[in-house]
Each structure stands twice: as C-alpha cells, then as structure tokens.
Length: 321
Image 1: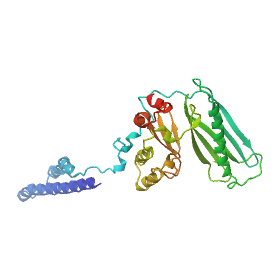
Image 2 (image 1 turned 90 degrees about the vertical axis):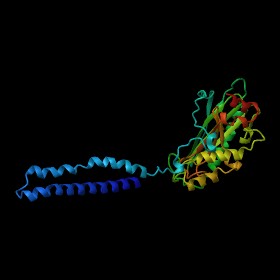
Image 3 (image 1 turned 180 degrees about the vertical axis):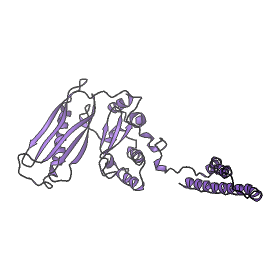
Image 4 (image 1 turned 90 degrees about the horizontal axis):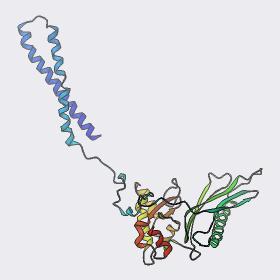
C-alpha cells in the first residue's frame, strides 16, 4: 500500500506538471497570432491545444522511478512454508515415495459387545485375529477383548451422572465404538479403540481414543520406551520434534499451548501406534489446541529414527523393511 501511494503521488505531480506546461506552451504560441490578427481564431487553432494533453505516454517513464522505492515484501516468519530447516525435519509427510504401499491388514473376524438397558445402549466391534506365519494369537485376542471392555467401562462410568432418562421405546444415550488396526504381523499388533459416547441432552457426543500395542513373541503389551534403545533419551527428542512440527504457522498463544501439551514429560506421549511406515504419536483434543481439529498426530518414519530403534527383532524388522 505504501508503494502504491507513492506511485500515485508521483504520477499526480508529473501529470500536473505536464498539463501546466502544455497550457503555458499553447498560450505562448498563440500570443503573437492574437497581436497580429484580432480576428476570431479558426477552429483548427482551437483544436491543436488538445494534442499536448496526451502526456500520458511520459507517465510510463515515471514508473521505473517508483520501482526503487518499493520496499521488499513483508512476510511474517510464521507464514513461511515448511522447508525442512527446523528441528521438525524428522517429521515427514505421511506419503513416503520410497516405500511400497502398505498391504491390507491380515484377515481377522469382528466380534461385538452389545448391551441394551433402560438407559443406554452399547455396540462396540473389535478384531479377533487369525494365525499368521504360524503364530498363536489366542492370548492376543483375549487381551484385546479385556482391553475393549475396560474402555467401555470407563465410558460407562461417566454417563449416569450426566444423563436424564426419558421413558420411551428406545434409549437415547449410547456407547458406540470400532477398532482400527495399524499393524498386525507375526510378532506385533498395534491398533486403536475409538469410542463415541452420548448422554441424552448433552451438547454433543464425546470421543475417546485409546491405543493398544502388543508383542506376540512375548505375549505382553509394550510401551513407547520399549521401541527405542535403552540408552536413548526418547522423551526430550520426541518432544522437541513434535513441538516444532505442531507450532508451524501458529501465533504465540497457539505455540504456548503446544509447548505445554507436548512438553518433555513421558505422560504426554502415552498414545502411540506402529505401522510399516513409522511411529505415530497421538494427542487428544484440548491437549495441544482448542480441540477444533480433534485428535492430532505426528509421525516419525522409520528411515529417520532407525539409529535409535531397539535392537530387538520385532522392532528392528520394521526398520529394515
């Protein structure tokens, strides 16, 4: 706007100068004629002064003079596109062209937990895996069922205090859910349990997401620190990269929210998933922002963290794919 204003002012002054000059030139050329011949001026003589009024052409010459005065464009640093120069270079787009497309999950059957009472209904589906490459998923399937029931009970425990039951043919409150499998192979299983519970007359349903990570070779669930080498300080490393990635394009208030929710504390990184592509950290709504974007995820691809991954076979195998 400053450049445009300067150009407009310069152009106006140039135009005024040219018009005044044209009028002065015309009058000076006519004065001798008027002194010699007091008769009326021919129409052609009146038409000639209009010709100098075309000094619009010289205005083009004034344009280069305005160019040096133009200030460089002002771009807020946080508006810059992500160029990989910050610490968040460890975070890559979800699409990795160097990797083969992920194969669909191995076959599994869907089981359901269904319940109907006078107050609410429950309908949650979860996987029961088949054997793959000779492994025995029976204990895995039992553990999945127990885990899903525990998540349902957690959702159920907060509902009675909220709801007001109205007699009718069908309860208006509910708990619904599905499971999404991120990885299943001979040694590892990684998945989420996604529940939606609604208490009648609440403003909106409540979403809850839990992650389930299991080793079939030891028949035990594992936590995030198990994925890395024992000597690797994974919490501050993950915190630094997550903050850098999630703060892109945010103002100071938004950045401060992220710094609190992704601070280097182990509790902030309790929800994670494994896949053939990498390790994903999941943040609940309202932990790093105002909740408008729902659950947020930062993915660390195996190519970028291979040096710090545990040497144990199930995890090292993911890096070598």
